[in-house]
Image (cartoon, rainbow, N blue to C red):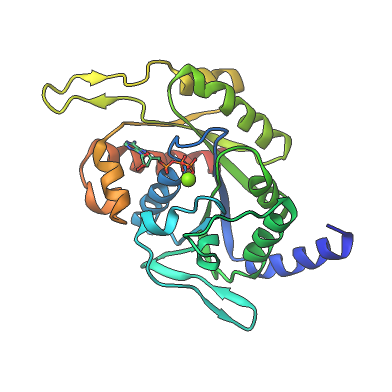
Length: 269
Ligand SMILES: Nc1ncnc2c1ncn2[C@@H]1O[C@H](COP(=O)(O)OP(=O)(O)OP(=O)(O)O)[C@@H](O)[C@H]1O
Ligand SMILES: [Mg+2]
């Protein structure tokens, strides 16, 4: 990107992002650990507390947010400004999928991806938001790199699962966000354990303690340990969220507690 482009981006951005208080990137070095699930359900937990939240899905190759969140409305484009659709009161969401054909694979190289994301960020008119939550694809590639360059004041939540093998990939993600100045608010360990539906015993599904180990070695908070529950995948496929459809469950409590921890950490860090 040349200087003029950069300046233009920052000028547009300052208008479109100016009304957003906190900007959070949800990422991980590893695929399938629950980044999109965490992004969507953290957003809902924040909305439940009365905040205005936007969710931005930048996963070009596997955009899932619209489906998980039950988003049926399309964004409107008015005079080169993208107006994200309201998913529910106080929540707006936009996905790169809104501008692509979901059934055909996208074979964009780095610069094309970066351009698409830049355009989406710079031209989306969010209005006033307390939180913008950005859902990234797995890994440390062009997508998280691009948003870290263009969204000022971006912080991160890094998602892991408990097993040892997740650590190597998540360490890479933690080093990546630290290097780019996208300071981690903390870690979320997803699918930490499961409560046996028959006897209530806590089962460690994967073994390992990656969340605590990484929290210790990087001196960052472990914000939540979220249990595994088969219901999560079923709800996600139906576009239903945990806070609306699993009221009173361990999962819902874990997300409420995650939402409080994120707010505490943002106040104190
Ligand atoms: N706590 C949980 N309990 C049970 N299933 C879960 C939990 N969290 C996520 N899942 C399920 O695991 C699958 C992967 O989750 P998700 O798509 O959020 O991961 P991801 O990290 O965003 O994946 P990708 O790397 O492809 O973007 C989904 O089917 C989701 O519903
Ligand atoms: Mg995802």
